[in-house]
Structures are given as structure tokens and as C-alpha cells.
Length: 321
Image 1 (cartoon, rainbow, N blue to C red):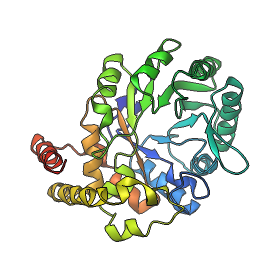
Image 2: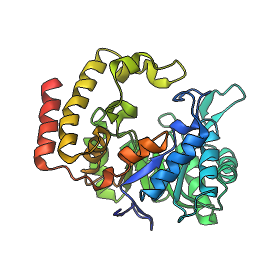
Image 3: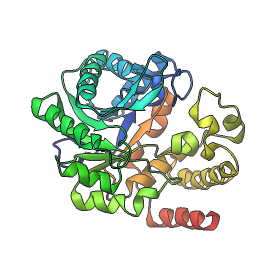
């Protein structure tokens, strides 16, 4: 699988990386429902067998459990160690309630916890998961702490997630930003107007999350399945998965299915490839919950959509906007 240089780092990453959000399991605010850990390990290892060379997780996914599962998968993996990306800044209490905390002491505690759960000596990319409230000076404290951790060798490179341009500039005033992790898919294109041009001009790598719109653009989601999502799955009440948006979104899936058939590919691969067409996008984070799902989408990085394909997709978007 080809690789692309991530921002100002020495990391050459595959266009698709393994996303470990859903494998955190249930029992927290943004869970995807229950998850079998053996299936998760198999999914990770199948993605690596297919050539993926990076895994993106976060401390808060499953309240630490996702990192533990990633660590377990790495222990039994016999191939080259993939790059490990994780995030800090979301802490939870005994009740599982999550809040933003970017103090230096908190982040230093988090990095040690993540290293332990992952069973690694250094984190390849450490990211602030969410920015603080606007104008809060804790952004500078948090980012300055990540810069110090990089100097100390705890982490190799540092990035941010869900930041806007103004927040990126504030971070850049302290230390270079290696990467930004924003949401991006056919259903959520908000970063195209301002954020993508900025990151491209600044040489900031962009690794997008939810390129398949949290499962909606996989081709496996149906109206019946969406209606049966358990309350333990955050998607059950999300506007993308309920009317009036659901019908339009499923119509888009059928349109993508026609394009997928031309290449003997999955709908999910077309959705991922669409995000990777952008020069500003270095890689896409793709979550799968078992080995079969990994088999179906992890090769999306080598799918090249033609100008005709892209025109068809854009035309559909315009007619249903």
C-alpha cells in the first residue's frame, strides 16, 4: 500500500488507518453498543495484514478499554509494529461522565495511562481530542504540555482534533502542529471552505474521521437496522440516522452502490476514496468491528475515482440538497 507523509513529521502513513472508536465497547456516553474483544483484535490484525500501518484510538474510547484492546492486539501481532496515534483531554469520573480537561497535570497523567494501556514506550502521534471552550487559555496550557512531552520523548509528534482555523493558529504560536483530525464525509463537508485550504497552505497533515459517516455509507445500513439501533448506541438518536435525513442518506448510498459495482468494490470503499481525493487529506480513519468488515473496506486507499465518478456524485448531491 502506498504511503503519504503526515504533515511536518517523519511518519509515512497508508491512506487508510484503523479507527478504534467503536471497539471501546458500551457503557459510556458515545458508545457504539456492545463489542466482542476477540472480534476487535481480529479486525485490527486483519487491517494490518492488508497493509494498514497506523491505528488511531483515544483514551476516552470505552473509558480506556479501546487502548487496552489495541495493546492486546499488538502483543499477539507478529508483523512490523504500526504507528500508534491516541488522544488526550477528555476525562471521566466514577460515573462515566466525560468532561474536557487540558491542564498540564491532567495531560501528564493521561499520557502515562495511555502508554500503560497500550503497552508501548512512546506514542507516535499524541493529539488534543477536543478544543476547550472558546477563548479559554487552557488551550495554550494543554498544547504547551504536548510540546513538552514531545521534547521529553514521551511522544514523537503532536496534533489536534476538531480544531478550527483560529484554534490552530493559537496552537501554532506555541509549537508546530503536525496534524489535524476533523470529521469529513459526503454527509459532512464543512471543512472544505476554510479548514482544508488552511491546513494545505500550512503543511498540516489531515487525517479525517468518519469517512463512511459512522456506518451510514457502508452499504450495510438500512432503514430497519437504523430503527433497531439500541439506546446504548449514540447513533440511535443522531439526525443522520433519523428522518427526515435518513431517507436522503440511504438514497445516496444506492447512488454510490452503482459506482461501486463498476469497480467490484464496496460502497464503503467508494465513500472513503471520495475523501482521499482531496489534496488536503493525508489519510482516512476507518473503523471496523470484525475481520470481515476490515476485508471489505481497508483497501479503499488504492481505489481511484474518475472525474466522471466524482461528477456523478456531485450532481446527485446538488439535486438532493
